[in-house]
Image 1: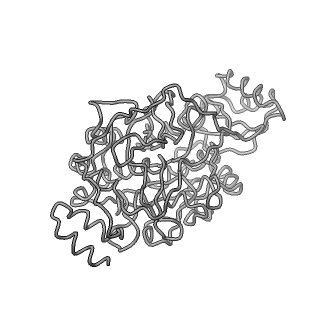
Image 2 (image 1 turned 45 degrees about the vertical axis):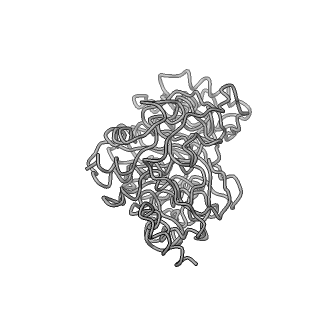
Image 3 (image 1 turned 120 degrees about the vertical axis):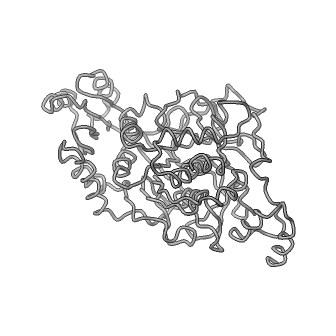
Length: 458
């Protein structure tokens, strides 16, 4: 039946790319090929409820603060300032130029201690709680028939000129490296989610202030880690396969950048169907390890509206590390906007890119958040991915629109690795199609076109 379908479709000249995709993706005989990029028009949403709010689903580690000392502060003065609030340092990562301390407060005095340390600008550059957030995914029908998003973003024409190669650091639940679509594409990685890994990484990374001390210690910590090439939950594998799944291998799906690779870092864990929860300290450990991973692209599909990791006011210590990666390491960070269907008025930050989601009609997905935080959009509904068992699944969520845009960045960097991160972002913006000229709060600069992006990179 599959062969008969292929013979029939091959006679349709205007479906030639859909044929190529069906060979790799195993489309059923009833599939109608998705529209090419030029045929998909983004539409401004008409059913937005601007005053809709959601109850924040935010938690944090009790009686613990993340504290980043000022680089110019005296060590003894910092110690004395912490003793005055009865704070105990229980873990440290980084070096004297960029250090984060996990500080235990007196029981029941978190707010009081946080307020005092935050006001002490002489000794502390950033203070925050160790917030915890779930992944931005909505699992759906596993029998979704095709990958409309690949043609919507003009991937087939882009792949004539390049299929990627740049490495993406996926901060998630790990990646199931053994499945066909990720075989040979996943490095050992790093497990930042275990207490042992955090303690080891903290000890090794706090070894001095010499340039590169953090990098050297991070490499040692990674060597001692069990890695992240397995995934008991599934979210990380879905994210990775949406970005880099192999093509033309007769298996489930293809990623946006099918020749790119993954450096997996586990920041969350759990059984299938459970919430995979990540916190600030795990992400901080992960980001320090990204510095030595060789990856210039980071995907983080976790957070929440207003309170999420994108909020610099709440996650100031983490944002110090984000800035280091962007401004000093020339990195690119992609964050998912969230699935609460609300307007998030958190100010946009220039050192990461926030991604909303659209559906196959070119409309804002009914779950996607939007607002001034948005930089780009991409397909995020009915996305064809590989699960931890190697079987196809269709998933919804900004968790997947996010790595799709990260995959476009990988295509760009693969063609021109010398590009600075601002140039990659400029190419992404210039390649976009949008519902209105320029930027808007639903789609940011719009949906990148893979072929245009590669052409500009060349």
